[in-house]
Amino acid sequence: DTVADATMAPKKRARVATDRAASGVAGESAHARLTQWLRSQSAHLDGLEIRASPSGCTLFASRAFAPGDVIGGLPTQAILDPEALLKTSAVAVRALELGATEPFAFWLALADMATDETSPFHPYLAACPAEAPDP
Image 1 (cartoon, one colour):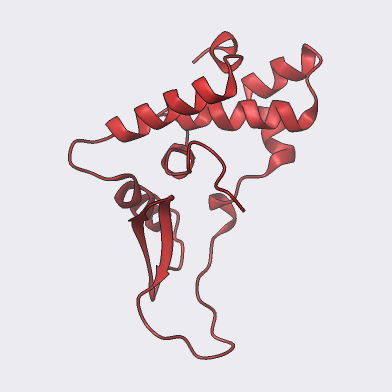
Image 2 (cartoon, one colour; image 1 turned 180 degrees about the vertical axis):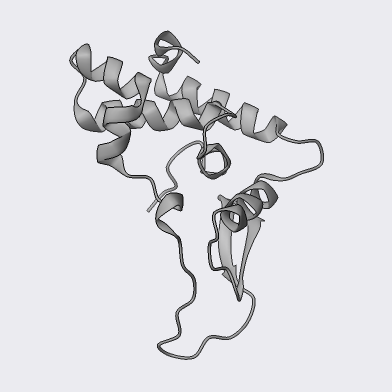
């Protein structure tokens, strides 16, 4: 993707991301790719399961948890750092140079990473809903 691609209309960009995510590895669903990615990042998923739902990928408990139990954990490398992304993403850096606000530059960087299969966060971002769900 190029900076020009990152400037396409948000709904079109979301559709492109959804189309590309859906085309992933043959026979492998977005939630299966997300689960595999989380495990590769050493996420703690004991008692948790990611399944398809009407809104996309949803996290479900696969066993009962007692009050106070830790139900999951994400290591630092599996968490997107907005400040770091604004400094390291070529799309975000260029958007900021062109006068974009930080939130918009961050959004563009996320949209770019969702469609870039070489991005380390691609499996996570490709599994996100194409549009924000209703509250």
